Length: 318
Ligand code: SF4
View 1 (cartoon, rainbow, N blue to C red):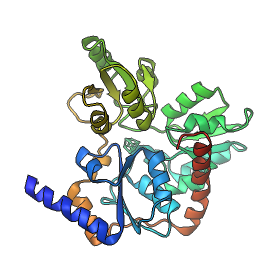
View 2 (view 1 turned 90 degrees about the vertical axis):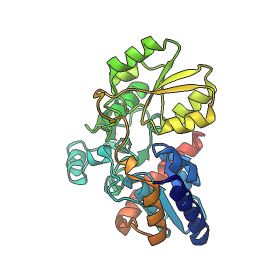
View 3 (view 1 turned 135 degrees about the horizontal axis):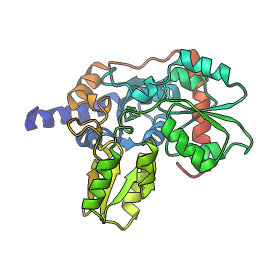
View 4 (view 1 turned 45 degrees about the vertical axis):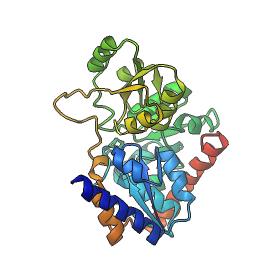
């Protein structure tokens, strides 16, 4: 797209937003230009909270489908739009409702904590939802002897288990982006940049987490890079977050952690990157594709999400 066409599209998006009383919520893994036109940029927790409390008639989600579904569950009266319905999530796909129902039957009597990166159907089968920002606090908010099922991310589940020491059975799912980081390449980068701190997301595999100076959600990584006094960071999460890191720390350097396959851009989330400025423009203009979630699913899925928001608020996380 030429520079002037892009400028035209951006001013049209702004005009339509005002005309239709619409807001754009963008995840940190979107491209920098999309983050810059959004009304609110955040991680899954902050975006859920924003979806639950705003005065817009239309929410356009610059993110992936489970996020737009979460917005619809929390704000069923609003029109929720997703510019590309193919913007899925390998982690959400790794936990299908039919299989999960069998898993729950095989492991009865446990409180079910599901990560927000799940379909609406999985949320409806859960007791509490969590994000990587609050997973440890959510588990710790339960009585010490409570038995737990954690789904679907095995790496975040393992991280939470180690942090809390609770009785947790973990679903065997994973995110293709966070499992793709190369430990060897990260160590090589660290040798070349000994002053750099390694900061990674808890969805990364254990060996990568073990060499990290700091582990946290995207929001926590952003906060850490702002408050910490180092000048250089090796960042082990989707590189879209580096846009905000650079915006907030202009004099610091951020190096994306390399993927195992150096010939591909697989540390980028191909689902997140399906959202483009042109698709946002068309979506807002035509008010489609629109997200629909079955009313029964909305009713069952809202309670565990609201429980998450309540615990997060009490813990001072939002
Ligand atoms: S980065 Fe991983 S968990 Fe996040 S949307 Fe992409 S595939 Fe899903």
